[in-house]
Length: 257
View 1 (tube, one colour):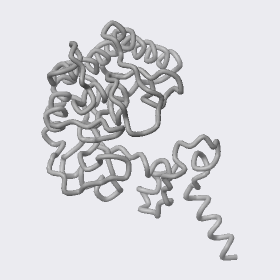
View 2 (tube, helix red, strand yellow; view 1 turned 60 degrees about the horizontal axis):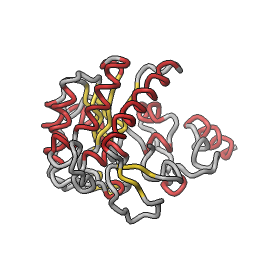
View 3 (tube, rainbow, N blue to C red; view 1 turned 30 degrees about the vertical axis):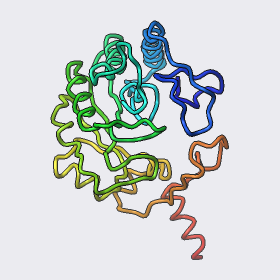
View 4 (tube, rainbow, N blue to C red; view 1 turned 90 degrees about the vertical axis):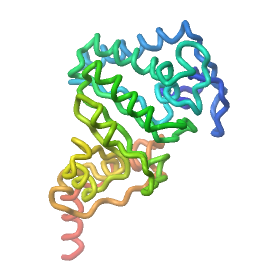
């Protein structure tokens, strides 16, 4: 269930809506299959904890199955998992409840992207969706809610003039709130200083800088991020070959000798 391209065989999602990208045709999940998927999430979490993980983050963002159920642009179901905002949120909340019951709320976080349009999974009212998610999650007292900023619509598409803010969503959360989406060192610090979020998450910068906290501490230059080599099958290029700051300094000193 790793999204539309998670497996090359039959894809099962919230809808049979055809996407523009080239994937195998999806099959709509039957209502009676959905509890089995919920239990798959629970079992995956159980296995993760037995393997030694301290906790888990539920991926409910970026066009993956949970996000598809949440968004009215792609969720066209007419059963108890589609139609109203409450029904759109049912699948996500059933997963949260199952996982919280399995390992405890203090070990559970969730990532959501109500404003994003990844995999053509957008929503007509992301503000209401985000607020509803936050209020519902508070009933389960999860450890944190991790949300993607509205300015990030898709990969690399940043809209600074977006009017929707996560502040009201954050106020509705009773756990820690994490913001993500196009942050650098300066505006990340500013967001925390202005009390717009508790924590800031970094993805692209962390992929390119294995020692990002150290670079932020020193306000050092960052490696250049190359989106074209992210998540490609090559086991070396763009995966473990971004240099550490110390190695860059040593190489620079060697060149000066």
